[in-house]
Length: 555
Image (cartoon, rainbow, N blue to C red; front, side):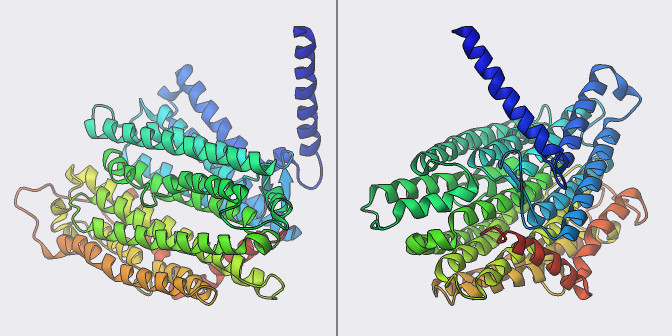
């Protein structure tokens, strides 16, 4: 019997391997071809570990291996994006439908790999990690990035969970990477406990959904929903509806943890405070971006015209409810930031607030997809505008939030403090850092003509559009606008300290020349925030619009 079972397992494995290999050699796109950037990043991780094992890292710094492997992966992603756009294809499934590739995932892959290049460069400039710990740190950083890349192209509920966990587990270790610091160890422990709980809840929700529908494939979910509830009473008195609602809510709990949405936000301030600013910037931007991209894919798997015909009322209520949670999250993040004295904790609460803003676009997407007439000529176009606003916001968020964390790290290296009161007088001692911080903070507020203003404008425009479907969205829009005003005060407090307070006698002198490596890095990060002054708005929004429309090609 054991021999028969072993032979059966070998047959299944060989069949699956042959399917993958035959698919990978097909034209014009195969599985291994489309998975190239992830394979290159994974190869970089293996090379770093081998360099550590054989002592090669003594004469070849590990960050060069990390940087070059990421750059090669980014080049492959650029080639795929351009080639795929030129072919004008909709969506291509690979690895037997577990993953999907389209302009949306291609654009996210480009942004994430570019962000990874900037993050590695920042760690080299700031000196964290040191040479001894570099192989471990960069392996964790790039391992988390591979998980995020999987999240961007997930086409199956199990790939959803796999991507989330692959990105989360290395993040737990990175938060506690500063050895000998009690705050780092405590933050890492809290992160692990919250993450383990959220992962368990999410996995249980996935099992409920897959068990109810008999499938875990995104393209099949809406079809199974339509077949399950055709002619059935769509009310909470229906046991299947209650089970579906419970599964979706548990699934959303996992997303809420990744996005730091109230009430799953408690880990964020402690994790960002205990971790280095470099890790905080990575978690704030990369982790949130991947989670939002995956959330959009998951929403579109459930909220299709076919499924909305029977479940439109429930989806509409869900969309408005998510909008209310988004408004609460933005309000809490901004109000809690007022009393912060540490720059990393302030940016942590700022991250919570901006997650609320971006979640408003997802709420608008659900409301529009569940409340509009699918036969309308503007059905997909209006839905795509919500995704376009989210993508534009994420693109600007890349520069303004990483810029703020990067400048915090560079100032820390000079004054050995991350307390806001210790920034007194830095506006004149380190003008490039102070001006860069001002651009990042005022862009986070959303002041014109900076990039954050255009990003919020696009998101709020989609919420306003959703208000014609359900008027409650206009109330959510008003709360979002008020929160923009609230946030101005605590951001301005940082600039007031830097420019209007004198540097105390005997305080550390900050010397970061404009044309030093650190100064040029800050300029490269912050200058794109001024791009809305030119033609860049049309260019970026055009790319985001085409990427958003590719999501609806197969729906």
